[in-house]
Length: 89
Image (cartoon, rainbow, N blue to C red; front, side):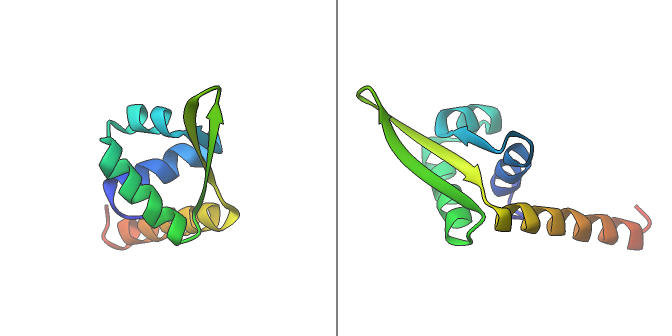
């Protein structure tokens, strides 16, 4: 989760629940290739579910935060808070 783009995906999806690829790309100011790689890593970890479909003739990729992803994100935030507290930040 710690990488900037992965953290951005998790933060966005933690409130939105799901988003299409184009929206994530725009919100996170990411390139297609970089976002694809990071989403694949999150999917392999079980943190997001990626669904591909067609709307008319246009491809649509939807990314949804999984329960495991929500738990991992909350755990990550808790760990960061603890680290900040311990260092007096």
